[in-house]
Length: 487
Ligand code: C2O
Ligand code: CU
Ligand code: CU
Image 1 (cartoon, rainbow, N blue to C red):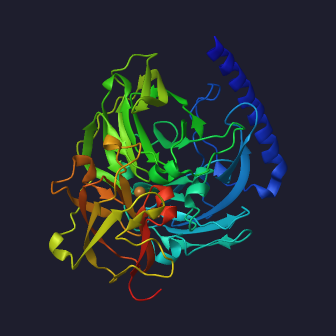
Image 2: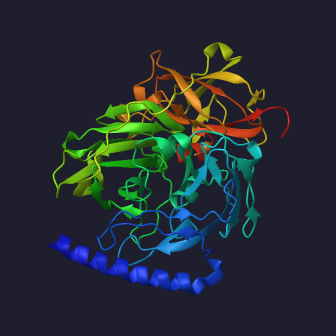
Image 3: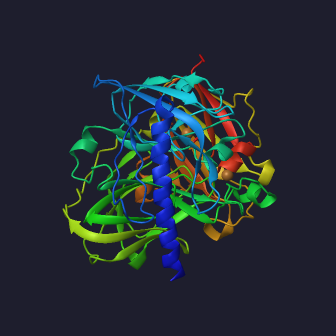
């Protein structure tokens, strides 16, 4: 009964907030860009999964896309009572989805309406260093940054987030992050769910910690330095443990672990199987049937859940470890398509093509985290690469344990590098598991593990490599590499 009461209160405040929101939206006039096409579903359901807007392409030329993005501060009512001070892109928390096509020329105007500098990094996108949005591309308050690039990689679910030196964790925690979709002929033609917001649903999973007056609690204690910030409240697309009504038998979910530090081990209640169809940088060669999926911060996975065996009225929970992330309410099960057995052909980068081998070792803990014994220094270039070189990188983790997460309480470090997509050659001397045989830009390395990857570095400039536990990155578990001799 108290739950029902709570629901009524929530429902009431949700609509009050919505009404207020629309009023403010109308009021703000030209300050809010009319950038988005609203696509939503299951209105009227309490705590339903918010579906982010698709950012409007302002250029009528089909080969050119132009987007406006604004980093701003705002407030959001996560709980009844005190509102939470937040950050968001074109809104009060998270950002719209930027959708582009392979081959398209893209221009983005990024305005910083915050009181602090920020940057916007396109995680997973293969673009020159100057367009990458790393710590070198600071945007000062009131300024606009205008990167432009041509998309030259296959269909994938990427994302964007700030990358300000020592401040990435805090700015992401307050709400700055969004998804970046690339589509191509393959994603158009495959017989998989692809109707945005209907059967193709983004899930940005985050954990947050709040103070007693409902503010984001980003006060980093010693324990947080060890494990990174772990929150006790789970948000999906900015809503606390929401639910989604399912009306089709097969639904595609594009999952981003957008948390600062938490590693999830997703599974569905009733041991319902699901199929992973894409990893960070695009489709896998064929769907991989899974009963659980480990996803570390920064990683993405596209999965298809088969609800055809569920009964109408069933509630299927998406869980991780011992907690609920969100739930699916099966309302109907239309369009039971057969999943294709083959998705895409991935050309393996030949190992013989590699001219250089490098090793990266995660070391230290807490404030002393490092890579190869070095903490990040913006003035120091750690690695020099030739333009278009193919290289093999070996990433190990000899950092000591002591933490509260991941396999056996050890701190796994997710390795991420900018400006390229890797193929994993070996995990601990073995062929990687089937869902790690596609394109990856972020991969988890537990203590004692060794992950061997290969990549081509096709874009010049300065790029970062780092641990994607944002508190580790901010503490210095990051280095930079220069591709080519220019800037
Ligand atoms: Cu997702 Cu260097 O970042
Ligand atoms: Cu990145
Ligand atoms: Cu780390």
